[in-house]
Image (cartoon, rainbow, N blue to C red):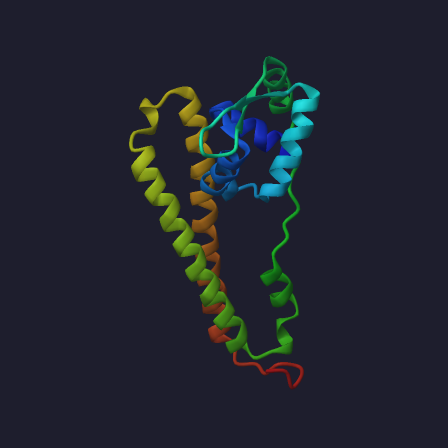
Amino acid sequence: MSLAYAILAALNDRECSGYDLAKYFEESIGYFWSATHQQIYRELALLEEKGWVKGETIAQEDRPNKKLFALTTLGQAQMAEWIAQPSKLSKHKEEVLVKLFAGNLVSPKVLISELERLRQVHRQQLQTYQEIEREYFPMPKTLPYAAQCQYLTLRQGISHELNWVGWCDEAIALLKEDNTEPNSSQP
């Protein structure tokens, strides 16, 4: 997926300035698609050239003018066409898996320590997602369709974090049973 579609998805929710869009990414879409402010501004300019978004300059007193971007009819059509296409599977890239793959080079304690740290990180993210769920989606079956779609992205995030915590528990338990020494003199 390109950043363009993540921006169009955000603008489908509401019109935003580039700055507001970057903040919105950090608070919502950024949980599953990240982008820097610079990338967002660059992509907004390209989307405006294509006619997928429209920018309107708003004059402000005591501050520089701001430009609000909104999804155009052409942008909505492009987004609908993209949504209807089969999704590409993402390649699974996790640094910890490479470390585990060659983990025999270190003591199990080294790996256990990293897995315990990761488990805590994923527990904290899970807690964040669960707080969002309680605050914004207390009764999902009563939500409008658009909110149900957003809720489903949150549910996938919750499932993802639950899976990570469970996998870390499993990996830690297995490594604690293993008393073998590493194949080298590494730490």
